[in-house]
Length: 257
Image (cartoon, rainbow, N blue to C red):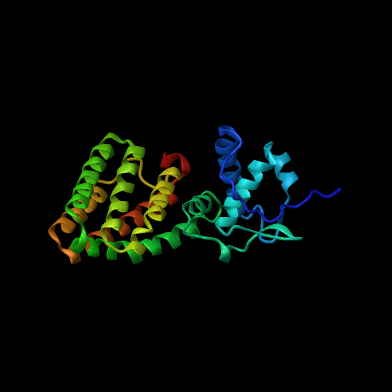
């Protein structure tokens, strides 16, 4: 007897049946399904059958339905009556969702995803730096300077994850300081790119002093109101990051750690 397919999911009750059921299990199923779809293991047009997923992941239908509801909100799946829940073509995905970015970076299409994200950053972040030089508040300038100081300390200590947090704060703040809400909304996208580079060992084991110096140059130019210098320094940051990633990819995996 064939398994029933998932019908259209419409949730109006945000309550969950227990912390484990609603948090840990839901997040785990969501990540596993999202990763499989992003990698093409579950391809476009394939039907997600509720009972099969319940058996595969050992969870309740409630957990499966909630995970599918989130995937549907991202455009990865579509639910229709009498058809069920099917995987959507990539062109319908919300490619700016940080979770979609993470899943794609975790899959076989990592190089393509990194190229797309690098091109996006090259188009947006130098402009953000130039706008920030005109619009950043004193508080935002202080955050940029503090983030660079933290990057310097953590880089010297070789603490990559603490360095990552400071780096993410720097770029989020810079995008917000642009004063453009569309640019600022890309903060999560850039933060996920930075996290992905660290997670997949696509950066040096110790941050390059030159990269930190360039971040300081951006912060100084923004504080000084020098838009051309801020934009130029940000372009150099992106060029340096791209070169570091390319060098890491050419090294053997054990040399990246």
